[in-house]
Amino acid sequence: MPEQHATEMDAQELLRLYDNGRRDFSDLEFLKYLDLDNVALPQIVLRNCWLDGNFSDSNLEFADFSNSCIKTVNFHRTNLRNANFRGAAIDATEFYDANVDGADFTGAHAHSHTFSAGELPWTLNNPKLSGG
Image 1: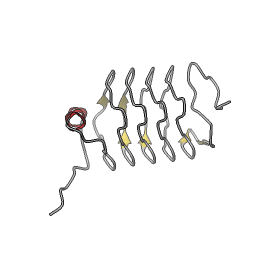
Image 2: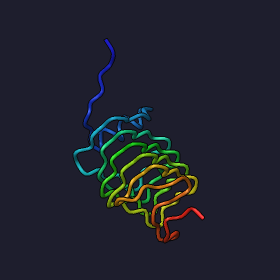
Image 3: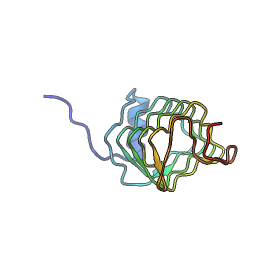
Image 4: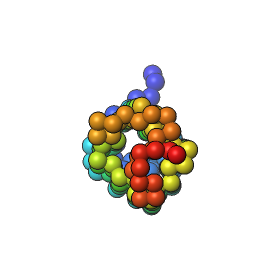
């Protein structure tokens, strides 16, 4: 019989499973506020998830947030280099001083705005919705 995965998870369980080698956490709902500041989770896959929390000062390089509902998330000073946000809803989410070099926000939605290829969210270092 195939292993069944939970549809809900908290921060402690996610960190435990990540430390044990799991990288794909797709299709999960994080119903409690995820307090994951200053953690290293490179290449984590949070595709089709519901996220609310704090990832400030974390390393999420090459993370996959595609098609996720990312609401009120703090990505302050987070390494999001080459992260995938394609098709995500990122309302009330902050990216101040985040490294979004190479990140893909194509088709993501933020406050009724749909990102085109190369567009980036507002950041303190890049205070415009433009990759150029």
